[in-house]
Length: 558
Ligand code: XMP
Image (tube, rainbow, N blue to C red; front, top):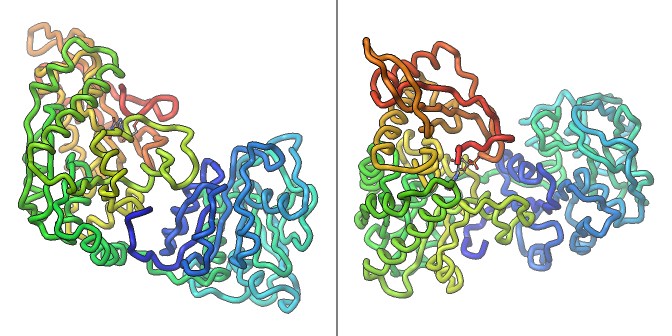
């Protein structure tokens, strides 16, 4: 987060101890219109807790570890002295318990899934602290999310108790509360579920309010963020853009900026942003056509960039070089490596050929999730790092080291990037495009890639996507595409025998691509789309539908 000086306003810090849903906590807070920043659970918080920042509260996330083992990370002890409100979720409250003198131990059986929690409200509102009242308001079934945004001081008068279904995922439990903590809610199994400190603004939940299956989850977070931490909303993409209008020109000065564009949503939005915030003459856009792109991709990208006001677009055609590099390769990793290496070579050579000065800036459309996954200073150290998400080109690394790398989307999640694209006035179609992998059609043509196979797949894929748009199914799907299988099968065309390629159709729904479910097409759509493809793409004789979710399959086939 070194380059952004756009003040995001009131901030909630999320200490990420590595729980599966830690990122979701940040998402939920941002969806409430409050900026949330993830930092590793054991990060040094000196600067962030200096009192001069806009941090209004700290949430301690869940973790796969136990607080009583050395693997259980310990937060910066200053969180307990800084006076900011703390909310511990699962491991988070167990951590606070252990750190403050209570006891946590393993359960005989792990608790997982929906579970009823009973909350008891004190009869006399004067008997609990102001912060406790504001927090407990989040559990009051009569208070809506918008009511909670106004930070009510108490649950409804006379409310004595309520029950809701929380989402549990824990193998440890609090056996003895830390001094000063009082229990306000317990699960049907008799374990503590809601704890509040009597004098400090410290709160604990054994369940996961960030999980969508948790009833009142968002409301409970809203009660903490607005009621207890007194955050004001207002984290919007308009505001983010305004911040960049101030900070980016100052940082870049009159130097040229080179942005690598791929046609994907992220680099398209990054391009539109740089063009609006900087002088368009200073913004150089480099696009490498690998020949492994979707149909009409290069024309679509250059038209979109021109509409965004680009004046210096450099389109490099390298289809032959990529096909040469792929010749004879069948192994998926070998194909990916050949493409990645060649991409870097061409990128470095072309960047040099543009004759930009040594100290020019390099820009990339890196997202917040990319930083989290690659463990670059935010959130936990990634347990799953996908090599394809971090092509560490020497050029990028050199620019990063010299402080000349600009990643203007590095605080945003994918859907925030899409929202920013809309604020920047990009076409709805450009903003809603499905993700497309860097190695392109090469990982969707199983086995050896040839020019002919690229042409067949490009045609079939375009028909498929156009048809999804025509049927108004495109936006309901995270990602759809065709995969050309390395087999041919027998069929009939007219009266003749036909020996055609097999195409697999893929369509998945997903929140972030990390997990995915198969899109449940109405059978009629699937049959009609398959017929359309076999009627129009003569080389394809058979169409199948991939019904594998992720996991165990991945979204791409290679
Ligand atoms: P998988 O296949 O791993 O893909 O389930 C998850 C998401 O990542 C995209 N993907 C890639 N994106 N370069 C990229 O920029 C790649 O090499 C790459 N491989 C997969 C995939 O399309 C899906 O959205």
